[in-house]
Every structure is written in structure tokens, then in C-alpha cells.
Image (tube, rainbow, N blue to C red; front, side, top):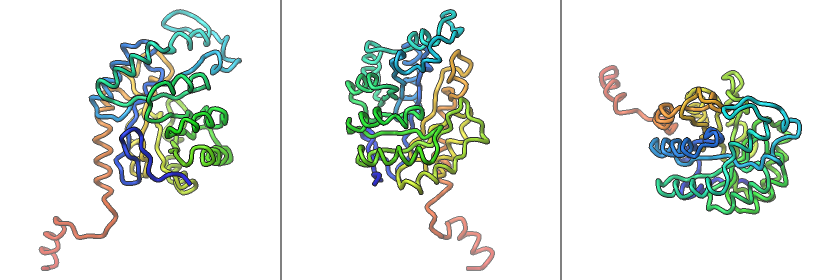
Length: 293
């Protein structure tokens, strides 16, 4: 059975905890370490818990049909494979990121898209691993990730119930319940009409596990609603400028929006209260006036 308390680094996640907030830098650094540093600074200043990247071996992770597709980029016209190699961080960059995040301090992690990338990431002391929706049926990758004994955050986008049943059965077998499912819609950006946020409740009821939300929409409200529905981890893509070149920037939060999100989440949790029927102090004043009691 899935664990009902999971530690991500020093942060304990359970049904009573304030949601853990992840800034998904992903590939929004565009291969520029200075952009990555600014986004790490922003996440730290906004009191978010973690920054996350994506790690690939492009020769393995890029589908064959995509490798030779031509693409116009800020560095000229090149194949999709060349573009992916151009923006991929290697050991020197991740060593720097690791040291820089420790100085802040803020946690960091990444999504491995293939086995060599997973092995690369396990050289670092990461608080957890994130499995992207594109990889949630990759049993070889899942098993290797489970063997690390690190908590797994597993996105559920682009999947049927039958596929998720198989993934969760696999996680139960190999991770000893040490996972959190992340509801997501994998479109970038995701239309509001397709977010289906009630899936957060459906996942909790079907698998009896902790559930989070990985949002790819353009505004804050879905993340706030997700918290009200019980999401215990919130992941949002972040960017310095939503007009920057790249596939993910349009579905990302600007720094100003990052600063607002935590406050909105706190507000909605205060509004929800604890579900106990009580007469509040303000109500007592009105009761005395209208009932004479």
C-alpha cells in the first residue's frame, strides 16, 4: 500500500502538510546556465521548496522520427536532435547547479528520460526523482528508479486507467509504496476546459496514495483549486519571460506569478477551514444581536 507520509528531503508530506512547491525549470534555461541561476534565485526568493530540471541522452530519448526534423532555433536552422543536444546540460553544469543550490539553500532534482540519465542523476544527493508522463509506462526506467530507494513523483498525463493501474501495481511492487502520483494534462499550455482537476480526488480514491498536481496552464487558479482538492505537491513550469523562445515558456509562470502562488495557496487553505461546525467569534456577536443570546 502507498505510504501516507513521505519525506522529500527534510520536508514531510502528509494529508495535513502545506503543499510542497516545485519550480520546474525543465529546459527553460535554453542551455544557458545564467538563466538557470536566475530561475533558481527566483524560486528561492519566492520560498518555493525545490527546482527541477530534465535530463536526457538525446540519442536515446529523442524518437527516431523526430531526430532529423529540421527546426529554426536562435542558433540557426538545425535538426531536432542537434537542438536537443545544444540545450542539454552536462556534468559541469549540474555540478555547478548542485553547489549553487546548496549555497541558497534550495533543493533540486530532475526528471530522467532514459537509463543513462537516471544513472547520471543518482551521482547527486537528490531528495526525490520525478518520472515524466512520457516515461510512466517505461518499466525498465521505473524499476531502476525504484531501486534507488528515493521517493518517486510520477506524472499521470497521457495515460488511460488501465495504463495507470499497471504503473501503480509496478510501483507498489518495487518502490514499497514510496511514491506520489501527480495529476497532469500534458498539453503545453493545457486548455482550462481539459484540466479535469477532479482527477486529483479520483486518483486518491482509486489508489489510496498521496497526490499532487503538475500544471501546464497559463494562470494560477488551477493550482489553487488543486490545493483545495487535496494536492500535496504543486509543480509549475517557470520562466523569466513567457515570450522567450522555446516550447515550454508559454505554459510557464513568470517570476511575478511565482511570488503570488504561495500566498494564494495559503488563502484557500484558510478559507477551507477544518470542517468542524462551530459558531465563530464574529457569528457570536451577530447571534447576540439577532437572537438575544
